[in-house]
Image 1 (cartoon, one colour):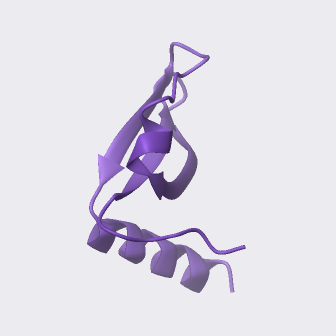
Image 2 (image 1 turned 180 degrees about the vertical axis):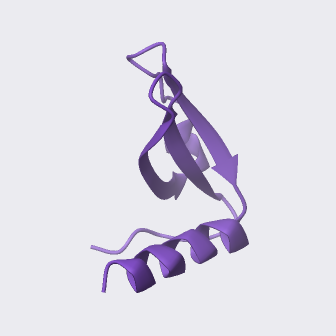
Image 3 (image 1 turned 90 degrees about the horizontal axis):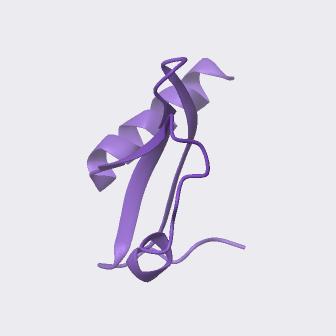
Length: 65
């Protein structure tokens, strides 16, 4: 099922600050993301624009082909 994208959609990247690795990237509705609490103190979420998110997804799909 495709996630809803509207003006309340937020795009993010989850990072592990200890290993300096990207854990995950995705998007979700703002009200759902407000409840996010990292379980590991080294995990951090940064929010990005829709344009940055689309570039990341496009680059990832080009590299993994």
